[in-house]
Length: 188
Image (tube, rainbow, N blue to C red; front, side, top):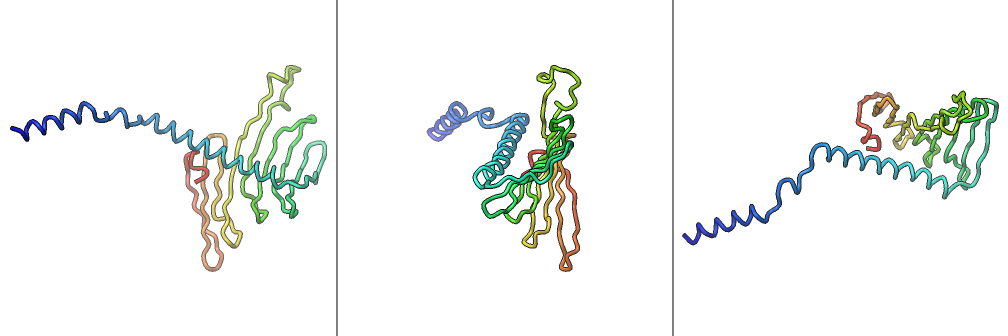
């Protein structure tokens, strides 16, 4: 009888004071929301790293091309290595779209953002209410020790995100595999 009472107390105590399933479980929606928020923060962190690199290492800016419809600007560090290049397409004196290319320490393309603007399309004098700018695509590259592209990931605003993995055989012949991925896997 003594053991029976002890077992009842343990069972009753466990159900009364223990954690409930609802305390520790997330709904599927909450889980996906957390994954989205984490990927958003990872994306912000990675893109800010490029900005920090530019702001801390920038020593020279050079406009290498300027015309009525385009502009190319290069940004260099103290060792004269290219950090970033900006290509702007102009319309009526304003930026229609802009391509920001960030380079790694070997001056290879690492991260590219393609920005578009609506202000140039405005046919009204109320341009303040017509203006918006958005990042319509972005991509990133990873390289092997021979400076060959091993991974290329791109996102376009449809939404569509793809990862292209390249491998090289002993003769240097490249084979590629394209994989559809979720947006939050862009930096993986």
